[in-house]
Image 1 (tube, helix red, strand yellow):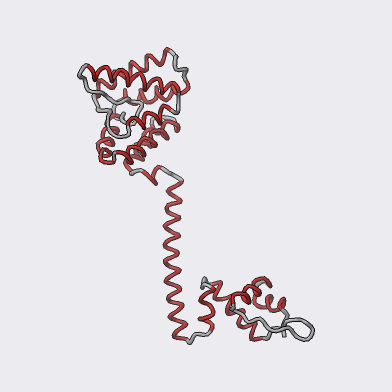
Image 2: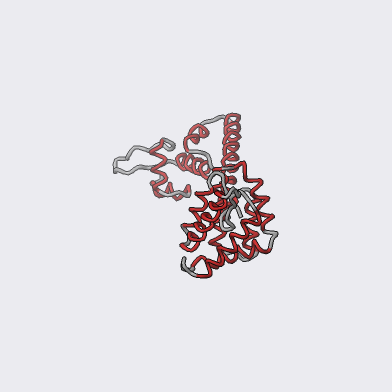
Length: 253
C-alpha cells in the first residue's frame, strides 16, 4: 500500500495534483485507515499514471474519465476527435502568431502593402521616424474616412516622390519640427511649399483632411503655423476662384 506521497512520486506528479484529481473525480480518494492515514493500492498508481499520460497528451480533464473506461473502438474514436480539436487549436495559435509578428511592424496590420511601401520609401530618403509615424497615422485616418480615395492618393504620393523638389520639401519640413514658430526660415519654407501646391494643383478637400492636419499640428508648433499659413493662402485663392491645393506637409503631398 502507498502513501499519497509515494503514489505521487510513482506517477511523476505532485501531491497537490493527486488531490486535484480527487477533487474533480478522476481518482477515487480512499478512506482513512484506523491510524487516520489514506493508503493507495497498486491499481490507484496504474490509474494515476494513465490519467497523467492522457493529461500530458493534451486531453482535457473533463474527457479523461470517459477515456479511462472506454472500450478500444470508443477510445480510438475519442482520441481522433481530440486530435482534430488540437489541430484546430494549433491553427488558431499559428494565426495569432502571424498577427503578433505583424504587430512588430504595426503598419502592415492596418494598412495596405502599397502604403507600407510608401512609408519605407520615405525612410529610404531620410525622413525621420516621427514624420513617418505621422504619415502612417494620416493614412490610417484616410482609410477610415475616405477609403475610396486610397488608390488615387497612393498613385499621387508615389508620383510626388519621383520629384526631387517634393523630397526636398519633406526633408525641410522634417528639419523644421523644432523651430520656433516665428523663425524666419519658416517664412521661406511656407513660400516654397505654397509654390509647390500651386505647381501640383491638387484638391486638398475631402473627408478627414482637417483631422489629418490637426494630427500633424499636434506634433509641432512650427508645423501648426505652417499649415495655418498654407490654409490661409489656399483660402485666398479659393475666393479668387482658384482651386485649393493640399499642403506638402499633410497626407495629400
